[in-house]
Every structure is written in structure tokens, then in C-alpha cells.
Length: 315
Image (cartoon, rainbow, N blue to C red; front, side, top):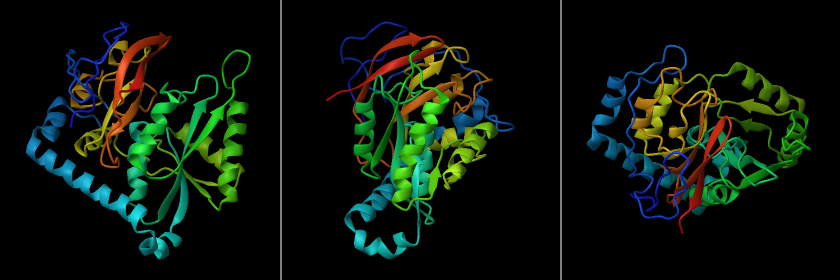
């Protein structure tokens, strides 16, 4: 379904109004390149095309996925008494939530796993400008995103900044510890992360959680990132790139929808899921949503070496 009637940015030009094609309708033309994933998981243009060429089958799968997740949400929200016994045997989990595609896939994986009960989403937000850390997405869009999923409550962790305008590692860890302690008091012992294959990042998170007596889990760990990218699209999720690292990816990718065209256009040295920080995304629709987030790209701007797009609600 169309998401909005809002225009996309071209380069650094500010688009003043909402009269162009919507997020799901916008078309971009770039010289195609073959995307490459982690390790041996490279996916050729032929493979991506083969996965998405069967439009009829794809639409059926998207409808089935959406119906399945709506049924799960209905069971969680409308029939809590029928799930009491099952929920009591599941392990409560807080999910580290960025609002991007890996977080969405991690949430989907946890919701389909009878071992876990997702009790909260936890997001780090810059206390200075009210934006999701690294992604640059406004807090208001985060609120609307979680509201349109109508699933676990959102716990925002506001990060302080020092005299230079940055949050130091010690400040970050102190803020996370204070946030996690509240969940420990509520009986939560597990935090889930959407990391894919970076060992040093996983070890860092595990050490942080271990110091608090918490367990870190990684539902998507070592999954083939090309497979994950294709799965995200095939299951009906929709996202756009909110930020790109100009050292690794051209600024023209900022604001583009995360779709098969983008996967084909990614340089060979860029991971299809952006696991090396090449880009960040914002998810605005998919099978875990009650309704799509009505969002548009208003303008683009640079904070070298990073290039951001300003996302805004269109309602």
C-alpha cells in the first residue's frame, strides 16, 4: 500500500513539500553492482532477481506473514488470560532496539520463539538533540514506530554529552547500567541484540551484561546477511536508509528505500545488511506492524563523513 505522498531528496537539496512519489513508490536509477555479504555469502544479481521475480508468490508470502503476525499480536493483546501459563514459562527479554531492519528481524525472531517473552524495547537517544544514536532519526518517529507495532513498551535511554558534544564510553556505559538495573529489579535477566557477525562488538556487549549479572543473546548471530536482506524484503518489511557513511558508501544512497534495487546497486565491498556501519535504516512497515508509519524524507544533510536524511511524519 502507498505509505505517503512525500518526495525524496536529490543530493543535498531540501524538498519543501509532499507532492512526489511515496516511500514505497520512489524509483532510483544507479549503475548496478553486485552486493557482497559476510564470508562466502555473496549474492549475484541473478540470485536477487530470482528471489523477487515471482511477484505473485511474493505477494502471497507477504499476506501470509502479515496475517501470522497480526494473529500473534491479537493473542498477546486481546487474549492475555489464555497465554498466562505459556508466558510464565518463557524467559523475559529486553530487546536493544535501534528502529532499523536488524532490530525488526530480531524482534520477529524473538516473537516466534516460545522460549522468550519480549517485555520491552530499549533505545539509546541523544539527550542533546533527541535522535536515535547513530541513525539520526527523530524521537517522534521512534515513538510512532513503536506505537504502530503495538507490541512491547519502549524504554528510552538518554545519553549525555561532554563539552565536545560527544557521549564518552564511560557515560554510555553508566547510562546503560542505570537503564538495565530497572529491568533487573523487574526480574529480567536477558538482553537481546541484533548484531550479526562482529565478534569484538559481541564480546563487548557480553562483558557489559556479565558485569550486571545479565545474559546477552544474539538471535541473528552468524546468519547469512544476503539471506537476511532478501528475507527482510520478501516478508514485506519496508525501510529506508537514514544514514550512510560517506567513507564506505556514496551519499546518494541516503534516503533510498531498502529494496532489491538497492541491493543490486551496493558496491561489492559493502555488506548487504550494513554490518560494518556502512549505513543505518528506519523500518516503517512490515508484518509486525499494525499499520505503516506515515513517514517521508524531507531533506538531506551532511555531518562528515556521515550523510543523513531528515525523516518526518506526514500526518
